[in-house]
Length: 92
Image 1 (cartoon, rainbow, N blue to C red):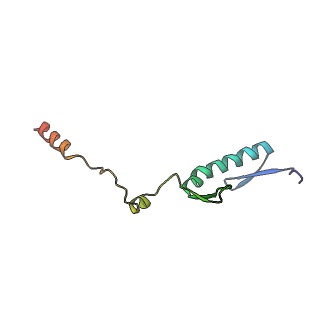
Image 2 (image 1 turned 30 degrees about the vertical axis):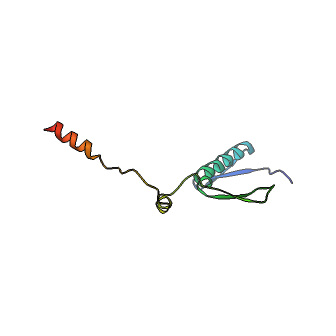
Image 3 (image 1 turned 90 degrees about the vertical axis):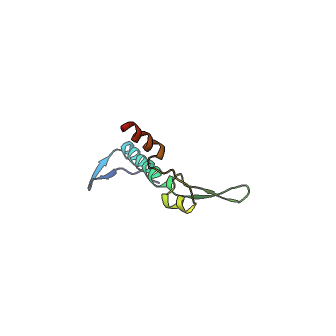
């Protein structure tokens, strides 16, 4: 396969000719950003080569809705009754 002579990067609606090194660095960074913003948030499946068993790799992030469906409990963010009572007594 022949090597390309010119490399281009599109930024802010403009196209710029760049060196091969800059092109590779730019797109490596773009791919890394996609990995962190998209790939880690998706569930993936993988097949074990030895057993043929399908392995599910869960996402690294959960949505609030999915946690509610799984009946996960969350700490209430309101102030504790004891703290309200102590403050009321101290203000008197």
